[in-house]
Image (cartoon, rainbow, N blue to C red; front, side, top):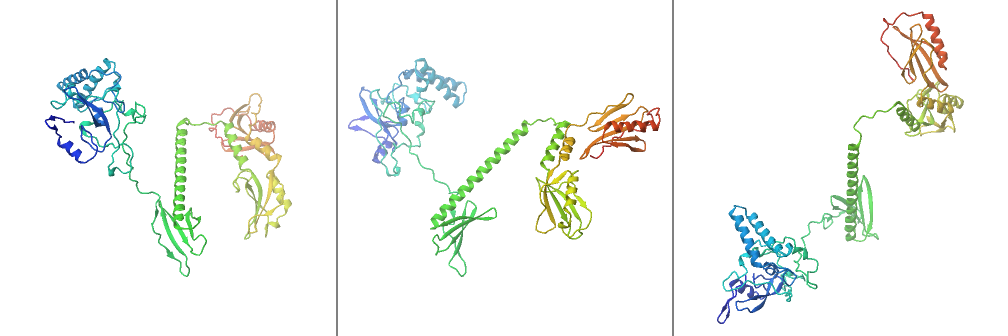
Length: 539
């Protein structure tokens, strides 16, 4: 606050201004702060004479000035009307028992309402959190001293200069005290701060900027320690070995003074040593250690990011997946099994002769997993006789056994392994094998036709229940083989099952069923028959 009194021989200074002047530095003539950017302004005394003085940015804006614009708003509401409306609103809120914040907000709302009524923009209304309105517009806070008014539209707000004090370092920005005095704080409802950084409202004038003080850097996460390597000399040589640590990883450094590149760096990664090359000095060694550790950390972070994205994707897919159980049809099930057979189809025949017992075993090797499978046609086969080595087994015998399983040998038998007890030969499927695959995993046979008086009921694929004219019950089954389909009829009674006929045609086995039923005679009823029990045949 400017305290000026015309007393006889000259002006008398207050203690705060005397202290500011005693520093020998530029200071604000209103709040007496030093080390701040100053702006030229005017005030008028009681005789109407105007005087120019310099104040800081906070004091400049506290009484209606806008930085960096050198003048009031284009449309300015009367200060008296704004102040009286704000005081009335605050008094009413205070009498109603409102809180301090509510009292302040009521005054601000009244100020803006009067400003808008006079055509002023709400953003140009300066907030008054410190009761600047008590100046009332007719006089200053002190008797005989008028309130400093805003500078005219023609007088520019010119910063006096930067603070030349040595404690400011080499900063060339206008010296602004970043610690504001509490009575001079001016809130910003949306207008003042938005001008900063845009070059100011008047061309050529920039808003004052605070000196940026660099934050003190924290500890380096990739610092190489120790600062001085501790060397261990190899006995009998002039070579030394040291250990450096960077971000939790250890690096071994080997020093050979006689080498062209005396320093060699290595680290252990996944159980193996990784050579990071040779270097001239320890500065190069520390640099390569830092670079390698940074690269490893970046790769690890990328790996974790990818894993996290994969887990999120899997979680989303699980949420989007159908909750109802999946019920596959018989055709879909057979298609899955057929793809499995094609994937694990044998590609080689293997002959093994035990060096202890002399027994020979013929097996078929899967082309996907390299092992033998215990399925219908790939199950290992023991060959009759005793042999010393695989060369003792006749090739014709092997070819016949392989062809019996639906394969043919397409190449020579060669030794497999290093023990000399195993030989292998490439094989290929025969047409009979391919036909068996189509019959096994393809559509099943049609339901056979029966004569009048007979009843046939399907149980599952390749299995039917048949009741003859005489009332006897039979089971009709079908299964594919390498030599063709096999049809079979079994009679079912209280004692169990009895095979009646087996042939390659459905009509033939049904004829045999009718003959067997006629021989058994007429059966009056099924009251005493047991409950039907379906036992599937092994395919």
